[in-house]
Every structure is written in C-alpha cells, then in structure tokens.
Amino acid sequence: MSINKSYFFLLIVIINSSFSQENLIKSIQLLDSNFENEKFIFNESEKINVVFDELTNRSKNYYYEIDHYDFDWNLSELRKSEFIDGFDDIRITNYFKSYNTIQPYINYQFQIPNRNFKIKKSGNYMVKVKDNEGKYVFKKKFVFLKQTSLGSIEISKSRKINFQDLKQKLKVTINCNNCNFSNNSFVYKLIIYKNYDLHNYKVFSSPTYKLSQNIIYDNIIYDGGTEFFNFDNSNILNTSIEIKNVDLNKKYKTELRNDLIPSIYTYEPDINGKFIINNNNNKNPQTESEYSNVIFSLKTEKPIINNIYIVGNFNDYKKNESSQLTYKNGLFQITLYLKQGFYNYKYIMKDKNKNFELASFWQTENEYTALLYEKKPDENYFKIKAIAINNSSNIVN
Image (cartoon, rainbow, N blue to C red):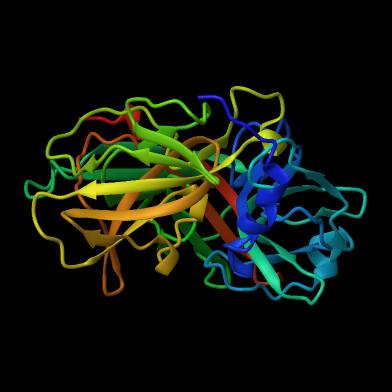
C-alpha cells in the first residue's frame, strides 16, 4: 500500500487536536550508552540516555532533575548536594523534529551524567521532567550502582504440592563478609524485582540464615505467571502472525489478533516486558517512526468480573483508566497510540489491592533482580551493597 503524503501538513491540526495535554508525552525510555537496550539498573561507568516524544510540531522548554530515594521509594534525607556533584534543574536542549511522519512529534533526549552533574552515591533514583510552569510531565525510576558486590539467585520449581505447577521458588545468596547484622544500628533490606516492573517488589528485612560469610534468603515464592504477549509493527503496513489488519485513515491503525488466556504452558520468546522503538524502512527510528492506534483484544472463555489492565514497560506498568480494558461483544479491548516497534505486554487482573496474572505456570521465563541495601548508623541514606540477577530459563525442576 503506497501512502500519499501530499496532504501531510493539512493533517497536523486535526491530529494534534485529538489529544489532551496530559496524553502528549509518549515513548519514555531509559536507554544504555549505545541507545540500544532499555534498562533500569546502571553503574557508574555507564551513560543513561533519557528519551521521550511530545506529540506536537513545536518544541517547548522542558527541564529535568533527579532525586534520591530509599529502598522502598520514599524520598531520602539526603540534600541534593550530597548525592550529585554539580546541579540539576536543567533545560533540555537536545531535541529533534520528526521527519516525514503522519503524526508530527518532537523527540527529546538528554544524558546522565553530563557536564552539569554526576551522581555521587548509589541507591534508588527518579528522573523527573517538568514544563515551563513547573508541572511534572513524567517521572521515571532507576537504580544506580557503585562498587557493588555480586550475589546469586537459584530458581526452582515450588515444592509445595498445591503450588508446584504454578509457582517458582527463589534462594538468594549474598557474600557479605563486611556486613554487620549483629549490630542493630545497621539496617539491611533485600528487595526483589521481577522482570522490569519497579512498582511491584518484595522486601525482606532479615536473612533466613547465615552460612560462613554468606547470608541466605530462602523459600521466596513467586507466581510463575505467563510469557509476555508481543507484536512487531516495525513495518507499519504489514500484517503478521500477531497483526490481523492495518489501515491508514488520517492515522495508522494496527489491529492485533485476539489474545487468549493460555490453559497450558507454551514457550514464547520475549524481552520480559520491554519495548524497542524500530522502523525497518528508515535510518533513525527515534525521529522517523510512525505512531499507530494499536487495538488489543483479549478473548476469555469464562466471564471475568474484575478489572483487567494491559501493562508493560511501554506504560510503566501503570494500572489506571488509560490502561483498563472494556468488555464488548465477548472481548476485552483497548486501543493505545504507540510508536512503531517491538512491544511486550501482558494482561493483569486487579482485585482490591492485589494484582493477578490471568494464568500461572512454573516453567515461565522470568528475570529476577535482588538488591541488598545497607544503612549505617552514621549515614542517613540506604546504599546498595550487593546485586544478584538470574533468569528462570535456568530453573531447577
């Protein structure tokens, strides 16, 4: 299908008028030094590339700052000068207009550290971007490491008979020869993240036992969950196994095939919830990729009375009105305006304050990250003492 873009500029006013101000910021990512991989953990030798789009054809003044947080994402007691060398609250000067796209947008980029500041202390951080009036348009979490020791995570099938087909068991071992668990003035917290969801984590105050110089946190149980669904519209007008229909009528439309809740485990390669901006037809995916209305549909065999949400890194795993599916004609559906690329996503059911996946299997491939935080009696912040990462593709049956 060829596209006549002679009427491109006539569409700009129409397209921009269909968005409210709060929905103009899109495609927020923290990328590695090479602009290739989405990450949330960075060490002091790496650059953090922050990128995002605003769906408009005119650039604006945006400013960024960072703040330090404790293990549980509460604002720390550190003054700004204690965790950064230099100053933040800096205007973003690196931005580019989209090129030859139906949807006009401005792509903003900035890097941490930079000539204005560098981070001095390890721990949890949040980068915040605000407009000219001081209103934050987004906040994004990340973890910063300095001189951190390594631990290990052993992942196995749960041994409890009622759960052995559904759950995974973790055993975290940290070599901590200079930890001081005998002194109550020292505070230690182990935090475990599953995949890249920084809003859903487990906190452990004490190890299960100690063995020589190692501390062990054992019998940590997680639902295996399901593999992520995915689609790839890097070729914006191509159908595929995942894409049922494509169209262009003022905007691109990408209609996905119906997703089904799996009844048995099936291996599906995924990237554990991340998304990759990509355009197979142009050189620069950041500024030459199109936006499309992507229609997601979930077909269920049985009625579901709880609210269902679609989540992934693309929406920072937020479960709110903008990610809630609606039920119509036997399908739960939602339409999201997304930039071209490869996306992982899954469906979450929310019941009061609990979140559930729609199915769970012990074989599901998940990535677990364990971080050990330490707060010394003469310090007023939690630093990261050790890190352990493992993937359940190495699961022990």
